[in-house]
Image (tube, rainbow, N blue to C red; front, top):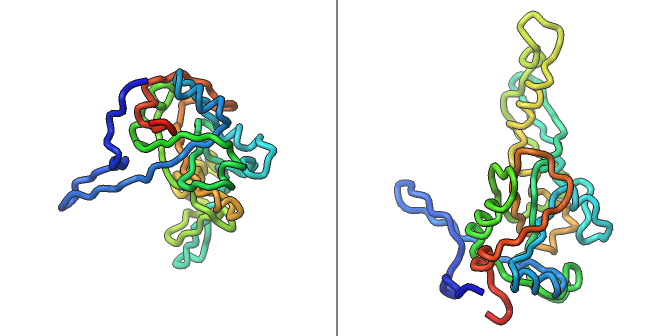
Length: 233
């Protein structure tokens, strides 16, 4: 295994130059699995990347969530006395990997007794993206826990006229409806989780691709290990 390139005090970060430097640090997270899978990653770089479709198929209460990626987005236009709402399901083209910022026996019992630490989240995400066919972009975020997967905002809402195929047509354009729905939904539904899962403190890596993703993907990427720390490091 390659020698560790990062000092112990390292935190993954993004730095943006505004009027003065702004640095956003990301905490280290842990990926819990059975010991054999941690060992396979440690020794050979073998790692299974999951997907939203797989998340929905899990039968145990800690991993399974049939509503993954779904949300109802609503815009209330008080000025014109109208509203627009759309139900969307995001992540059907994405691979995903879950980790946690929490440690303790409850996490180990739910997700596996062994784990490895991802301390350089940005480097890890970028390296995995290089291994995924058709990857078009990556996201990282802590999950957002809610009582209802509903995104409500105020502002100008479109009228029926805005969705017509052309000015004189009686037909509506599904493309226009979907485009507007996507614009008000954004990336947030990919990280929404029911409140009952809040104890998991999940951080989620997402890799969007240019085609539907319906299963997991096994990769062998030894170079990814340099962004991780194992028990005997």
